[in-house]
Length: 126
Image (cartoon, rainbow, N blue to C red; front, top):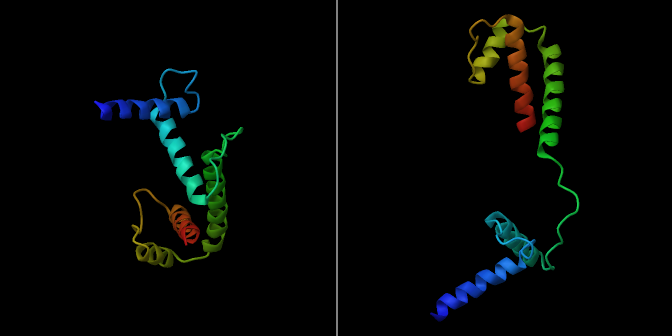
């Protein structure tokens, strides 16, 4: 019975210490986990838990859009560089990369663009 009372007291303490615990009856598990993670990280760094930030973090969509724009710029520059290649050289490079030589309905310009995109992504990943 004492074990049950100790567990209940522990849960009440967690709920009381959670952000917004006084205003709401229920606290989301995600909020408790985030709070515990912040406390563990702060303890690992040797300082007190940080206060809740006033502004939201930078949206990951903005970072993804910026990365996609960078890749698109590299692809267009790479397409310009590969325009003079012979078709057999483009096919050889695509096959070396493990890609099909020609996709259904693909013309020479689209094949060069696909090779340029593949090489641009390879340089970004490296």
